[in-house]
Length: 499
RNA sequence: GUCCCCAUCGUCUAGAGGCCUAGGACUCCACUCUUUCAAGGUGGCGACACGGGUUCGAAUCCCGUUGGGGACGCCA
Image (cartoon, rainbow, N blue to C red; front, side, top):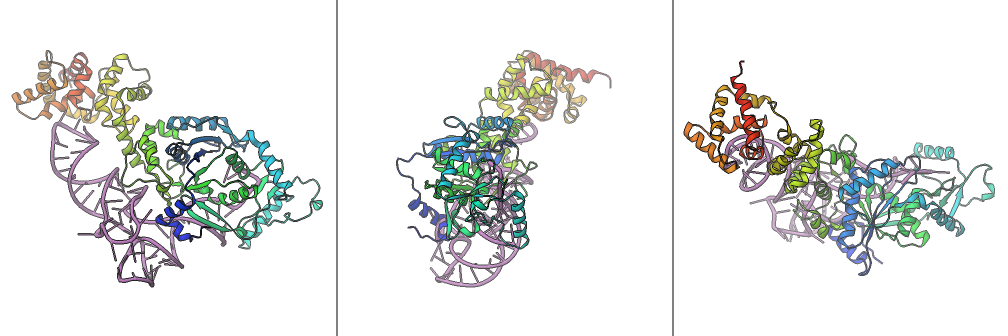
């Protein structure tokens, strides 16, 4: 029997020791993890992280990652939410093994287990009405006592049951001693059994409760590791009691701290508790979100940019911290910029195209597509998100004459336009590569006197309509001689137009 | 109210009693590179919540305080 104190269990060192002794899985034990969302809304960012951790853990150990939709609340579960969750996981690249399990289809099995407990005398029928229960809770709260069911039907003769009241089935939970959870993240957590009441297993309509369903399904699906948000930590005590009553092996628990908003409070919609599809729409790459979520509450030394292959090699439960982390868009942006720069140009073109179409109101022409392909290197280096990338790419897609923003207009002074006109004359039969064009520009300013910017900036304004863009000679090359000369002419001609 | 959990720069974190004058990353600032803006490079600002112990020695172990979070449904 292991008799480490709570505190030894909590320290990093002690924890490692504790689990070396207690939890080293048998050599032939295959890890089976699962993600078990309830389809009452989209796949939010916290759920996505939980799914990622489970997925990574299974991959790391060469095990299986299963998906179970906990749709036992028929009122609140929707088909749209199920699809949103599946889409979200798919977009994130978190594939699951085997068929998706729908918990609602297993109600009969759940009830069967509960009735077995009833037959064995380990559960009992409770005839309390909802009103009675509510009154009980209110009285306890008012008296400053713990709020829980008092077990009034636990040993009462069912013959005394009031007529017309359909009973719920409750577990006859231990009333003395304590229940201990050996949690891979939280350490050894214990609670006195007098703190826990007799949980409902079956409702009055014979439908199973979440508490029953989870335990039965995790057991039947042979789940070895339950990794979930630590809002479930107290549920783990009750579930542990149920496992014991059933004589089943308790899985390894790992309760991961929740993600908080920037103000430290529970993540709300305002903070970013959005569906993953919202992050997709905001222009984040799935690999960036995966990396960000991985580092939120988990660390591997000083490593920051960790691709998925590396994450699989490194991920384990010991690296998970126990304090809640706050969601930070600035860091996500930074990581997204990194993965944007690393992404293949063709892939980015595909992602940016629909965004351009939305801005333009029509599908860009083939020539534009070609420009995007060739100009992507300069474009992707300057964006944090695909939305920003699309904004910056717009000048490649817009028809002439290009609208000028204020700073670009300010750049095109009469003198600058005149200079641009003279430079354009040299361009007519120049070799059309960025390097040659830059050399030409340098030669031009050398001859005229002045800095490269004197010609490069007006050129940028003429070509892109903005004062900020990818390298102007790259833009020149990508646009091609005809389009570039036409854009320059537009700007120069405007100089001749009467004010 | 009861129970449980947490506490290192603004944020994410490294940290296993001496390698800590506390490291990295994001943000911010400066410089650099430079045709713009990014990216890159260099540097800077910036933290062990507080109080007691234990110890030759504490960010690290113990106790308490304070602050934060979570759970207390015939929801999941």
